[in-house]
Image (cartoon, rainbow, N blue to C red; front, top):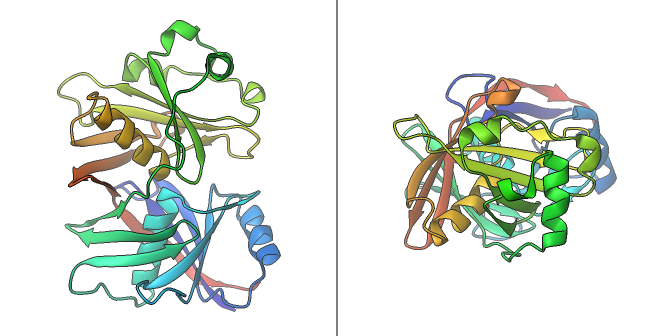
Length: 276
């Protein structure tokens, strides 16, 4: 029997964020075992906690969707750190937990009731071709002219980010999942001044059992890089995500000395044991 947790990430209210399944003490499980269990949980991601191999890390994590392993993902990073702490892990005096994953070492800050990860560098950060943008517009079922700007924002997941004129336009999207194919599309638009958050975000997957993600750390990390680089967003802002799915995700972005920190609340909601 192994310890098992489910953690709600990116919401201060319970059961309004993005759930993550976490298997503790995962040593001895094969990749096949992990993938099969992740498929069974039917959540966007499932993680497996292991002893670190790098002496600088506090723990090592492997991250799986229902169909593949990811080198990095955002809400699994915060959720895994929360689960590790709840299982008895302690925060070093400097306030940073260090996670080891396939993408390398990721620092997680624990302070002020929220957690935040330092986003790893984008591995693809480039213009999007018109051919791909035509595919995006068709999948989102909007005119091509509604897409104001775009960029590849790959940091593990293969995000293609697009910017629309407003949060209302983002919330009004009703994509055709049959047209998403292999695309992983992130969409962002600004809220009116005075709103709780400055931007609204949605994330759509092609070829996935879960085709809209409730709240997405990796995508928001990519958006933070792109929008601050282009002057669209300030160095510190809040994005909301998940409203269409009945969630209330809030993602806090802080850019400090060139580092992008992506933060939010994370709380354990289910704890028990499993047999794999």
